[in-house]
Length: 373
Image (cartoon, rainbow, N blue to C red; front, top):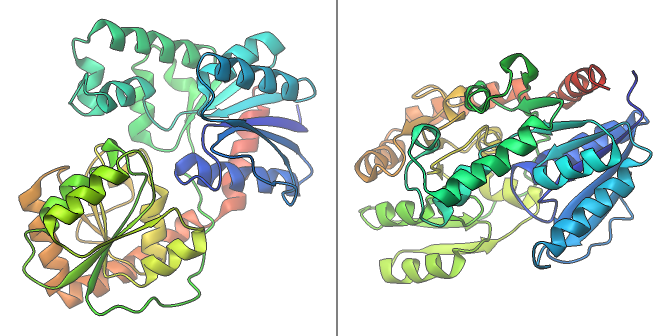
């Protein structure tokens, strides 16, 4: 059946930053351009004017308390789904699963992580990584969250993951492996339009300021460096105040930009000497590709799907998550080895060409979606 109309659901959407907030606008724009009607249901900090967009965006305030917010989200998804062929979830998975049941419309879900592990890790109930969580003896609350997560998975007609790493994780949740499709994310790269002047070696991270991103460890490592540098942190989140305090205590040159537009992020990346990502988990991080495209050498923790795009000593450097000594050594390596930096930049820019074909990615999404409607 040919796809004519679709509801896309996501917990974050511009001006938010993060994977779904980058992916969903790209998918929605391309689908709209080929005549497919798109309605996006999302959460927001504040109501925005989206009238300039070629698709409809329904925003529900994020600060509404649960379960009332869930009820509102489900109501809006059901309303949007009345004339749609399908519901496509890229987060807001539980609400989408309930709405799918109520509306009678099939659900395709893109899974970018394990919400059960993220919640357990974020509140300190489980300190291990994603792989360890899958095999661990869990507390009652975590077991309940696993049931919540599995409910949404099993209600999906099809699962799409952005990496083979995550496909293997999801297949362990008692979901048929042949119903999990891997589609790498394409990225609409923004071209930098200016250089941001600097007087020191510039280190940059672009991330939501949440525990999973490991910014605190980066600051601790940077405080050990013996050469002049500045650290730019692009993004915002719950840990901003704590990180600002740590920055003051570390007595190093750190600048928090807050959330920026994509072109502003490109400008900062293009004007920096090394990009560092110390996540405890990533499925297929867009920002690493954006750093490569903007000629910024990449130094990333070897977690999740990151090694599928970062080849150590070829187009970037990998290190063990939270390994302070290894991160310290590799920062100094990039600083001191000019030829290595040039190699990483050249290979990185060549590699991103594989991810620049947005039309091809969207064609793959349409094909797998049309197979289930």
